[in-house]
Image (cartoon, rainbow, N blue to C red; front, top):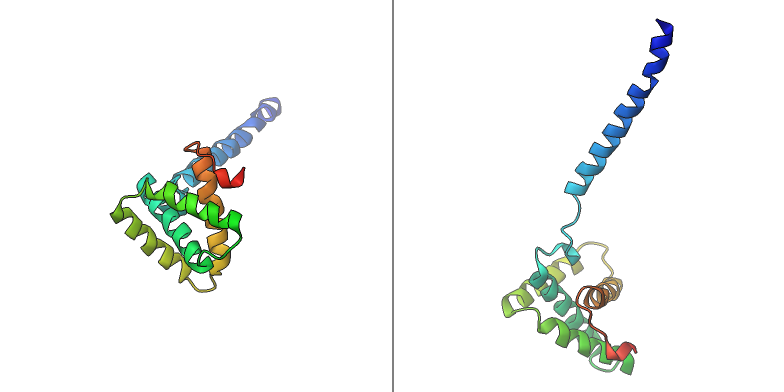
Length: 133
């Protein structure tokens, strides 16, 4: 009898593995949508990225480093072509809500958002920013 019980050691191990797979599956269902900044679709994402680039341009007032200004101009043109006016307004509203959260550093958020939007333009759309060459 003891010999048979020693063979059953794998049952708790299998149960732990099944539990871990199930927990990872549940976590994946609750994961992000795949669009930046929690936007629901690509047009909303484009509207948010357009709002970020326009807000950054508003802060620099066109007087920043020339390479940065060229990058902002390219971002604005790139995302404007992908966001219709309704999505641009929704992106501005979402950015405003994000920036108004307590403890949110506007400059840091815009900096990271510009990076995320630029990487999305390069990796998903294959765009090459001439200002970054």
